[in-house]
Length: 123
Image (cartoon, rainbow, N blue to C red; front, side, top):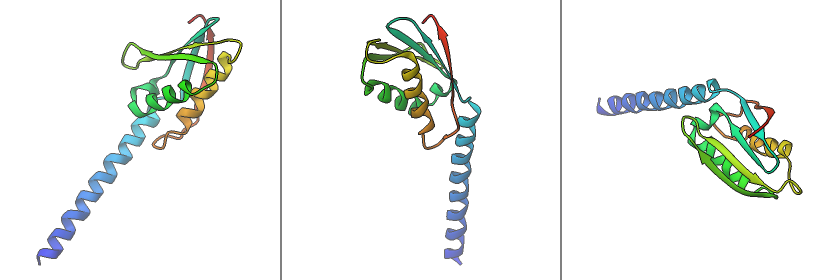
């Protein structure tokens, strides 16, 4: 009798964990699939509701730090933070910075939803 109770308890626990993980994925999908890149001559400010997700934010920051021509990447503010990118405009432009951020978000395992990039002047 005991093995059946233990098996039922384990199945219930697995169901709860799977449901929570599924709901987390749904939450990420509801956070939006757009980033806004505001640029000036040598820096950009990137905004996205997806930056509320720590792993999404880290993925974007790491990708930008490894991009050729990017001098500095930092986060400012909170809920969600902005990503500020200092760059050498002779080596990389705002479109490329937006594309790097887009690809990083689209590669996030728990939310592979398409991301749109909107560019604005003044960062």
